[in-house]
Length: 80
Image 1 (cartoon, helix red, strand yellow):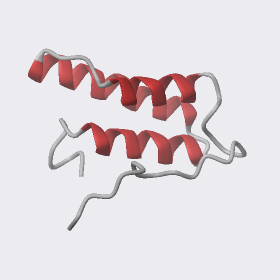
Image 2: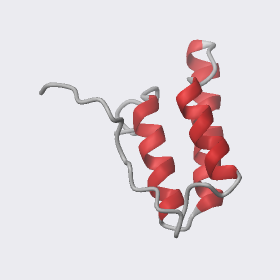
Image 3: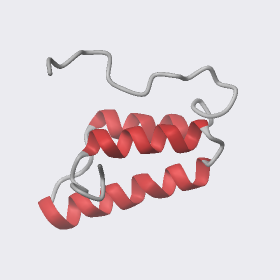
Image 4: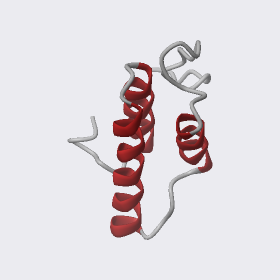
């Protein structure tokens, strides 16, 4: 998904979460930096608060193996 559209923050968040849940916390944090750099360079904007919040939660260890965090997608449902 990110390879097709690197500006999709939802894909970035999903990847960050999956990496953190699989025990790859540092890679998840690096993915945030990559996402942030892409948004700044391509659009001149910072990541959304939702993305920043996930980054902060991963950084302090609130998301990862053994934390019980299993939500991979947003809570709202989008019709297909």
